[in-house]
Length: 433
Image 1: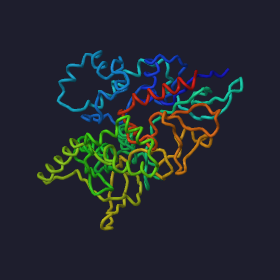
Image 2: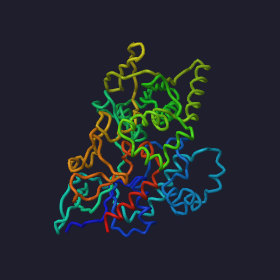
Image 3: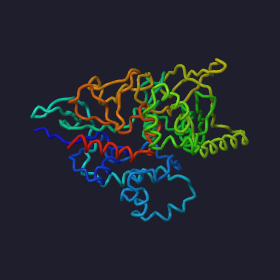
Image 4: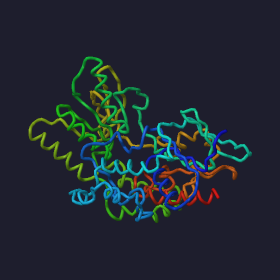
């Protein structure tokens, strides 16, 4: 007999982990199960670069904005692991990414009873239970069929792979979400071909925080290689960290953004973009600039940042990748050779544009059961519930996928994670008496 849960959560990254904590701490007695494709709890495991830090205040963690007294806070994690005083003595503004990843893993460890790890969802459909009531039916890679009265999708956004890379299938071209495993794969390819050598040239595509971090990491990892970062804008830009702009990550701003019409949302997005996208923190920009300057002093420049560049075509061959690049302001053509290419090109938000997704891929099969606005955006309520076409459709929530409806605070960061979890938890309790 197929078991019907009150709630099935797809994905168990920080978003659904925060929801699990909220449901427990608020005392909501619901039968909840989470399905996670990864073999165990982890966060940004492919980007655990030496020296890299997070970009949010550590108190904006899984719980503290919702419940500052929670045992699952970052501060309590440090305390329980005997590192609180040492951490407070660190001469850094933000915690190391490695430490925050360990915090996420620690918190997730308290909820292993609710999670099936190593289980990938292969299909989501709308059906009925044995009594004829509408339910979600979820099929998994383990061959299970599960049902739920409500679904919470917290899978994170899909990587954005722009042209012409989107049609190039090669282990020598990879997105930052697989960075460290892909480097291992490159070494295996070289060893298998009898070319056991360090890369001679590497190209990074993008102008984000991650692009700068990757450039620095590659320069340290392969000190003899030429590392070139190609940026579509004029050059690398510093992130807007004004406290006035940072109020875009306040819950009041989320409500304000939600009520704005689509054309004004687009204008707000244009202003807020540099708080999170196509820009980098000042510390890594200064570190990169110093590195390039010192290499020039030594007449041995190996790290380059080339702005106003667009890759127009590419050719993957046995030893690497050949890129044909246009300088956008002059129209001049360049040819770049690289052992491999790293795409620091961001992620796909929900929406009708070519760089967006109409709906999260997992619910594509039931997309027509939900409403879209006149601009082609999925209709999402203020409580993150997707608006159905029929009133008897079970509740479906998007956890961490609603930047197009709720603004920059929903952009996959920790900033409003715990407060969003509270909203979804309260709505689940109302919808599932």
